[in-house]
Image 1 (tube, rainbow, N blue to C red):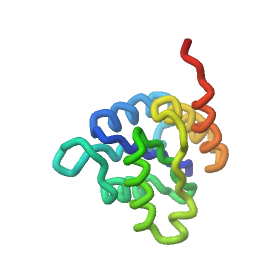
Image 2 (tube, helix red, strand yellow):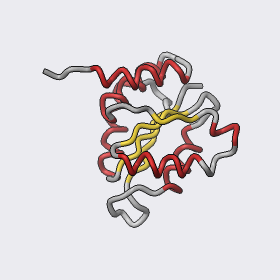
Image 3 (tube, rainbow, N blue to C red):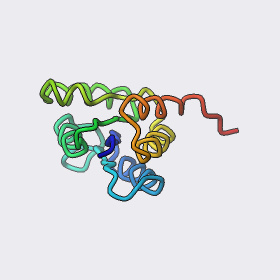
Length: 131
């Protein structure tokens, strides 16, 4: 079992691309799921799509969510409301850059780290310098 990762983006293509990149850094069988765009393929976020990804990503060790914009966080918080209390205790939104945070969270989860350590790894992406 490993902490799952869910990428919430206003664009399905962005969410899927970040998941593809993260899977390259992860371990086989690791659950990294996109929740991007609207059901009709348009731009936006859908709480029910996010909810489904949260359920599918949780194998019992919890789920970290990384989101691209503020309203993606709001939709994710709405999705949390559909979870039962036990499930809700195992999900968290990382306040981190979505790409870098997803990579660091994936690597940390791939070694079997618990939810708090995976969250800490994701949040540490805020400190990364590119130049």
